[in-house]
Image 1 (cartoon, rainbow over the protein chains, first blue to last red):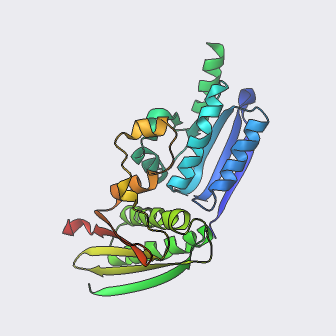
Image 2 (image 1 turned 90 degrees about the horizontal axis):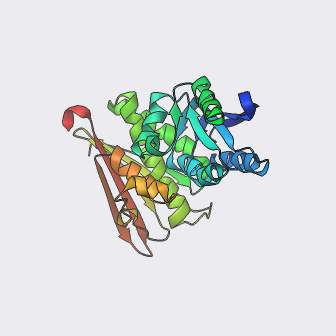
Image 3 (image 1 turned 30 degrees about the horizontal axis):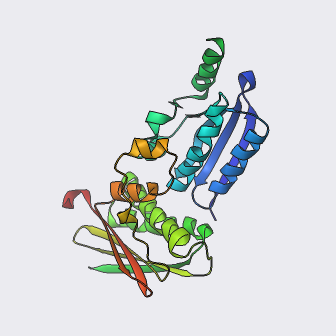
Length: 120
Length: 142
């Protein structure tokens, strides 16, 4: 069985932060789908996904981000990704994600961009 | 080919983790550095996920046979199933950016397989078996 956990916490300014840990594949992708779905149900559209402890991702995992990004952006929110290891970043990069998704080195940077948008 | 190892898994996603460990260990043992072994592992995961979702359409009790053959610097993974014939190579992703903009999730795994491996071949015999052959060469043999 793949080892994968999701922790959800409150960031600054009403941003939801999700910490991913372990292996995100076709088996565990549904857990992430449930997390996004419950955030959308609660009308929480500003989301930072911290990938510091994410050790593995396959296209099934990337597909989850694709499935929710449109709904989130339609509601003036965004899904921003942070703290990826080079191995995980390479997979996102091979599929062209950096063009369409905001990816930051660290979580504070991503939270700051949500603040900037609010003040602009 | 000089050496062969085989593993048969059930067509269920919870078996992917153990399969990845089997492939990763064999790739490192054959001489691939960690980052290259990880590429092989991901390509095999993508191929088997396609079999589970498309060939067997989510039926968890079918079998997928995965064999590793090595020799002359080549590491070949052969994935066989007896499900519905499906050739993902027929799906083209001419413009990945456009593909992502349209939120089309299908075809991403195939794009990864082709990017990660040196060779990807499908051999389909409808009603009998489907075979995917993924090959990567040791850096010094490319």
